[in-house]
Length: 139
Image (cartoon, rainbow, N blue to C red; front, side):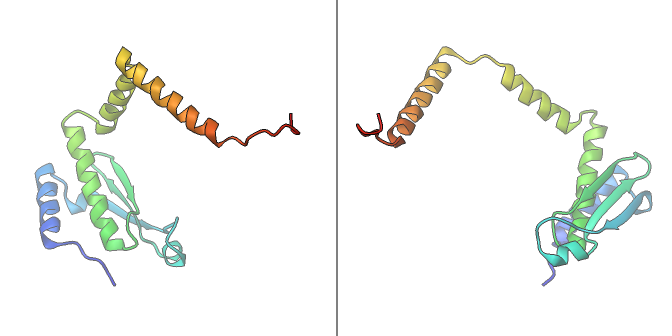
């Protein structure tokens, strides 16, 4: 059974490609031998798609599905997302990473610390209850 992409999604991708100025002639597409979980079929078939946009130099590699056509669609969509992020002047990954680091460095409030310690003490009590009971002979 071959999965197919709905016509609406395919049309939306074509519209997005047109808006971003991505032409099929500017794309270099390679099919690579697949790998990972999925059985022998995935390891024998060239379902992994590597797509390179010549003008921008962007390159994506996609193997989300067992089907080559689905991966071709996903690769084009991912390439368009990366191009859009680049055109906006902001790399999405960098923003996400910066936000993650900012959250890590942020000081916790006293109330948060108290709750965290309360949860830790509760967990410790549960684990202490799992310990084997020492008999008089073992002591």
